[in-house]
Length: 129
Image (tube, rainbow, N blue to C red):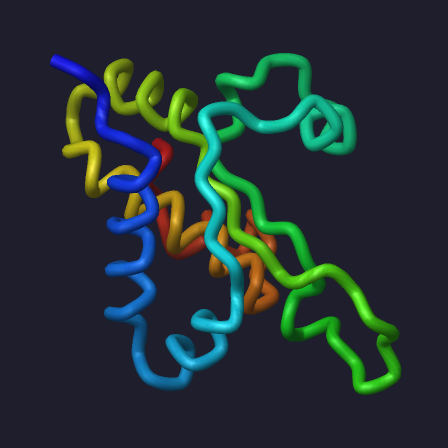
């Protein structure tokens, strides 16, 4: 059996965003969704990470809570999903479907876009325990 494609991951992520409540969905639809097999070396370096399989997703941008009308032009906000690390985690976990895990990583990264820290997310989402 072949692994689901990058397109499959993007389709699931976009369907998750389409189900966000109206107030969140409108803001989320302005964020790019990118899917790659692995995170880029500079992403890992910037995060102080050595092992690419540990990074399943990444939000690149300025959180909505930190944006200002005084900000100059910047690259578009982007949610990255990394297919190979997600597949590795899914196989290791064995207790969720792949689409559930893709959805979870998508929501987690969009939470960063909305200004939530990892600690904020963890306080209401015990998924990783």
